[in-house]
Image 1 (cartoon, rainbow, N blue to C red):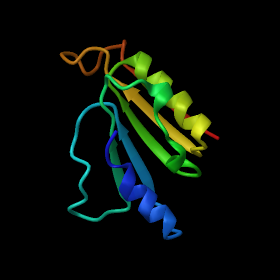
Image 2 (cartoon, one colour):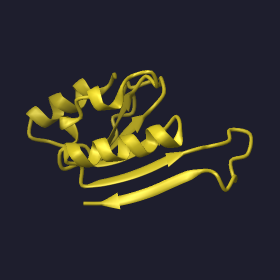
Image 3 (cartoon, rainbow, N blue to C red):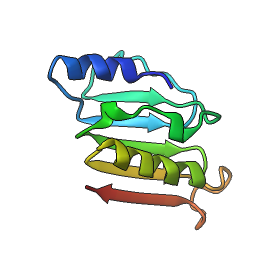
Image 4 (cartoon, one colour):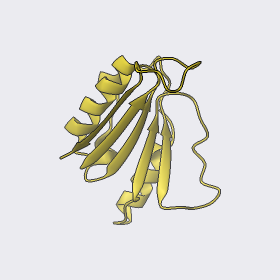
Length: 109
């Protein structure tokens, strides 16, 4: 997992991002435009139950899962970590973005 250190530093300064984008795939986590959102990248081979997501306490999180199973597991992990809102998506079929097999859910704590 990469990108969480910037959020931890922000939290230590008693600030918080508006949104955290938790992507279950390798992606750029740098912040060239300095917006109110931060990105965290998870390698899809990482065990979700081993992730330390405590930096999400009290935050709104947008999860992009690599699979529906991992997206659902990340939703539960974010809830356990103390996130206040979690929006989750996972595309079941990369060739058909309108597939009925796609998964999306929004949870408010």
